[in-house]
Image (spheres, rainbow, N blue to C red):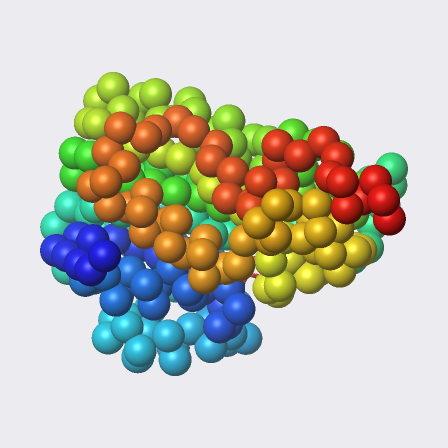
Amino acid sequence: MNNLLKGKKGIIFGALDENSIAWKVALKAKEQGAEFILSNAPVALRLGKINELAEACSTEVIPADATSIEDLEALFDKAMSKYGQLDFVLHSIGMSPNVRKNKAYTELNYDWFLKTLDISALSFHKVLQVAYQKDALKEWSSVVALTYIAAQRTFPGYNDMAEAKATLESIARSFGYHYGTKKKVRVNTISQSPTMTTAGSGVKGFDVFYDYADKLSPLGNASSDSCADFTIALFSDLTRMVTMQNLFHDGGFSSIGMTEAFMTE
Ligand code: NAI
């Protein structure tokens, strides 16, 4: 299908390099006729390759630390002065200092835990609240954030990110209610398979549970490219009545108990 997002405008948070899920979403959104601003934390602008992506998408990068209301307000002001009200927002942001510094779950640093929650979950509320207060989103627009099944089940290496994802998914439901009632804005999370990215491979034992999920899922792990396809579908008008959902995009992993292949191994 072509031009699913023709005429639609948005903001895409979280493209760091070509492995990032947000990177793939940006390329597909452009392919489908959307116009958008790219945003990432100022430090990521220095370390990543987002300017290359901006060039490929004929757009600009506006830095914003997603934990800073001030940065988010400035970003939405700029986006609205360029496009008027927006049609879609992608929140593809996650980071845990505890994971990054190899802290065990039973020895968490609580200042870092708060940072994990702020960056990986509260930032979603902040994005939504700034958009809500500025009336930045059109009716029937679509907001998507990325999450992981560790919100429902325990994956030890995922550490305090599990709490962040549980909170993130809850924010999608709660804000989905408020924004839906007020303005018919849709808010959903996509629960994606393990994916080889900077955030993903920072998780301890990532290779092992990547392979485990791949073997257990009838369709295998979902790639970042197919995650981008699903995100485009959620931004499009084909999914207008979908909101307040956590949607598993994982090749069937979340519904599997046991497979014959595992039993005979
Ligand atoms: P990534 O490392 O490419 O993207 C994470 C992004 O978060 C980076 O661009 C980083 O700069 C940004 N970020 C960190 N702190 C920020 C801040 N304060 N303000 C603004 N941006 C900030 O990795 P990936 O995998 O593309 O991650 C995107 C989302 O997908 C994350 O929410 C992640 O948890 C989620 N996810 C990833 C999976 C995986 O296995 N890679 C599986 C399921 C969900």
